[in-house]
Image (cartoon, rainbow, N blue to C red; front, side, top):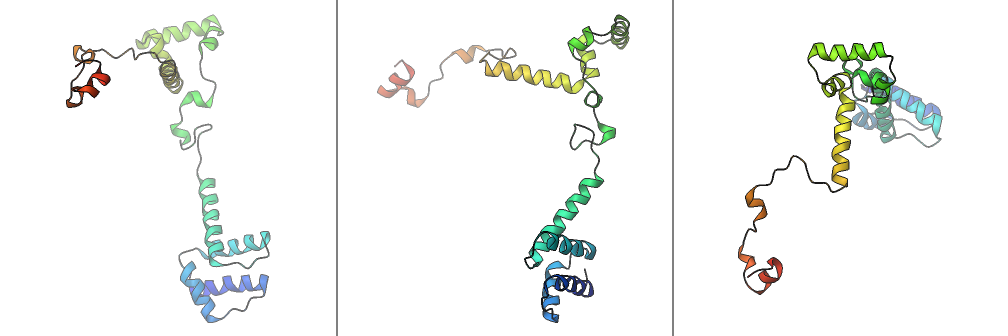
Length: 187
């Protein structure tokens, strides 16, 4: 925004609140608003006076312009349904429609189930792999849910293989003496 545009913005504000505008006001406002677009500043002033009768200040304009830019960015951005931040061309297919569950597969006509089984065999996939190919995000969610339930229930990690050293007590300098006997249970 240049000096003339800043002067126009202050003239618009003056039309709403009858403020006195001089050259120093224009220079002071320009120092703060020079990096903004003139059309956005004018829209910010209009929005301000549509909502309140308080005098508009440069800080109000900067906040309103930030809101205008955010609205513009949101309008330009298109996301896949149910996948914030994911462009439609990168969307996972099972999110766009209903995911295939065991009940959905069981309720399918026999011809369709046979087709899916044949497709899995042709691709050399196990039923679990076929499920992950058809609904990768759902399969990942199921794995995470099983891990969560295992952790919440206090079940041991099935992938953990203890070694001989894990069962042995590791002595340190604090193990010896009267306190060490109480803590470790040995002398």
